Length: 403
Image 1 (tube, rainbow, N blue to C red):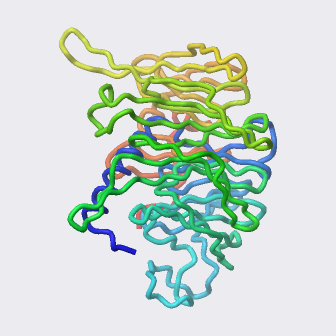
Image 2: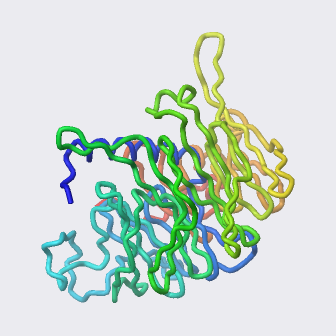
Image 3: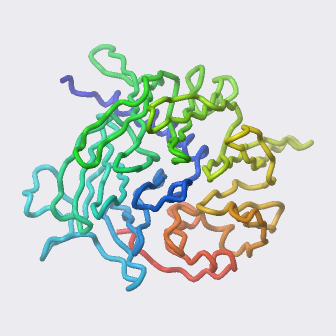
């Protein structure tokens, strides 16, 4: 195998950065929910961890700190502890040269990590963007008895679905060229749907591979036995500055889990800033640029509902700031200093206090809490009760993040 040069790594990091930035603006950033079929979390779960490993289970919340050490916040004891089963462990970072008996269980390595729990086992996905591979491992909930399951052809894991003992995730491989002995990444990316049997680690390619510029697949969830996912790509290379010229395309697909049939059901070329699959519809927000008479450009957002039976679109609300889609709710700013919360189940909209919501980004739903981060450079993550956020009470529950 040829050793990858620094030129390859720099090119890969730049391309992944463009793809990840676009995924962050085109997805629901903080969802970890049960199936829209009303099935339990033990049967199915949707995970979006594009801001790092963070997810909730019934009695607590897993998350990583800035050094990629795994912690668990126990809802009952209200304690945030390292997930390590070793006695007298120094809890330090380690590398391949470290003896096995000295390796801290909580340290997940210098990777981009995601995770989930299935049938009382903890699964970790570690992505290495320099090799465009992701390792899937399993262990007990305290990280003891670790076992490697398989290696997947995935550059970066952004979202995934676990359903009936199978992990559904997007395969992604950027194409390479070689010049003067150096391997360079191109903007063309192959994407396809992969299924992994969690009992055996066997992986299956479920759809044909498609190639596109800066292409990516975002998993959305399961509805009525159908897996929903969105594929985005450009007609030409997207540099981050040529959105209109590059020719963006967004396609919504369904994959029938029983018949294994895959179909495109909707196509859209708008710049979508948020997405959320519900029992009956796909909720999404479209970013629009408005230019004033003085030449100043400001962004606004229109929130829509796509009926998944009729495929008809309905406008729900307008926002002057990026709306936040979370499990069960949409938070948005209708006008300056006027924040609202739209309840997806009741379709009721209520005003909320702006004190907290205007200065944080919601990363994940964690039981009766939100896992948020202050929207500043080197922001501080913390947990806050949902009602406190709505009422403007900044009652922070500190968790480990900065080393």
